[in-house]
Length: 149
Image 1: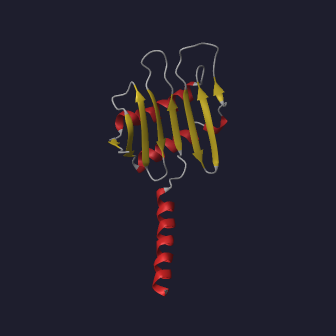
Image 2 (image 1 turned 120 degrees about the vertical axis):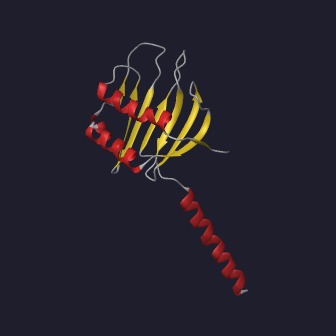
Image 3 (image 1 turned 90 degrees about the horizontal axis):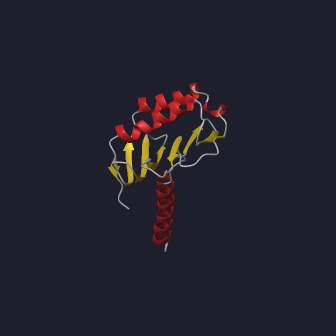
């Protein structure tokens, strides 16, 4: 009976430990690009504190599906610095206009207990566009590995 209880206790503890390590924290940086009527790339890209990057490529990219990659410490630090120096938390929540057929970029930064999501449809400052380009460049520069479902 004691062996059965011990076995049950070990099983419960190992299951809880596995669940905690499998659960990933929220991404530090997330970018989502929506489609347009043309060939605008549609995807979402997430970058996590453990240097993991996840890509969900929908259309108009060389890749399609779910992928993961590792981002270097220096790349991650440079991105975080760019967001901090660019005063990301001071941007408006959205930049938009009453026009159609533009792709939308959603950029989220989660750092030091603060989270902000900015919608860029049209008219965003050049400094925000520069951050978007830095994040988007990872789609082309990281070594992506397809994730099996």
